[in-house]
Length: 303
Length: 315
Image (cartoon, rainbow over all chains, first blue to last red; front, top):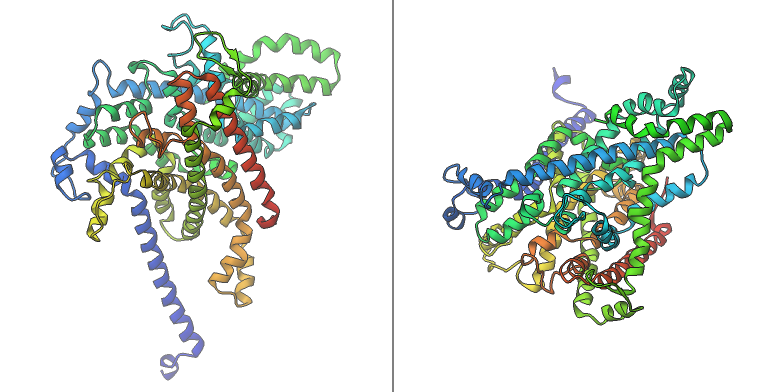
């Protein structure tokens, strides 16, 4: 019995160590959760404000719950502009982001395949050149590209050229891109060449090897690129601001910035608009977090 | 997602030509032909949408051009005028300030946060999601929210009111405007940096820490002697991207300042270029400004790379 009560010094130390570990873990949890909540405050405030009445916003304490769920802020925001609903902006953003994503997935995977499997002259120079465009501030091409699009004819637009259409916002994506090419090349390099050899023995040409071996195996990497490009297009402000001229062609970001001018002081409506514009990205993130993390980890590039 | 039919459609026209190549040339030449075929869209894009325009911008910067009348060659006049333009110099100063404060601040905070999040505890994935969320949000919507946080009756003033601090005009006050924008940008930029650092932290072999513990190293010295040196490649890499990204700040400024026209206090280089080109239609002037920005970013990047040998440890 005495043997059980009188613990050896070592056992006592290990017991107190377990306690210390537990306390430390609890403290870590609390600190992490508190920090996480602090990071979320802007989102929580956006949500509560969007459900309050305008009077309530200025009278009640900032972080209080709304007196009721005033969803009418959302419908007021949705139908705020004459002839155009916020749904139109949504649709425009979806069309542009989808086309840009499609273009990038196709042409970047083709370029990445060429860099990963073929040997040809100027390969290194060309790859270095593409990587260099990653660190060049793209604003330097704003004016020349605007001029290019200004002189590209388009029969359907009011101006007769590409200005005022959504073409400048996605056609570029069908002509390759540094981020996607780099990301997918890294992935293609990990695919064992035996798989391609086997297909080649079966008489497949490089195009068929690409489609039947590389593309199916690279699905996770393709998904990563697709998610990133969709997010970049969805969140972009500068380009749509430059090229889109009429309200019915606006994307959610330009629409939101336009709202701001119309809605001065109407915070509930504005927060409702901001929240609705963020919602697709937030949902996508919660579903596909691992692809975001992988994309950043593999390439080091951010949103 | 990648529809094979569509991909196939793109390749079709090239088929016959390749057939001839197969019969006549060496395997190496054949391989090269395939490579160029796969690279065709990329090469066209590089020539027409990036490399070409960069040179074109240099040419345009030597002209006076409003896009209505033909351009007039004016030599380096635009550059000379820019160096005497107070608004441009202010934009340059603001952008430099933004970069010099937001980049180091963002890196230090991200490093601390990544260390805190690098724990194998239950539910860590959910906790991380909360921290990562700002990553996917548009700067436009976020700037609207922060505009509300910073408003005279907003969250920040109410919070500071608890401690008896008088309400501030965070966005309207010229001395507070830029720091306010920086605080928001740092918050939004945190997750991206944290994710890179987390990957770096998880790449450090556990044996290093075990060995150090055996030698009697405490938490702090383990962080200083092991974690920090082994993380320097990640820090270096994140730093260069943050540096280049910071010079391009636009969305936040566009939304946060008076709609459409930032005052002198918050105007940035990209806003200046946007305004010159697409508000005032001075294409030559805007191109000259963008070339100056390009050169500054290039020089800053080169200088940053020069420091590499002094503090980055590659394993």
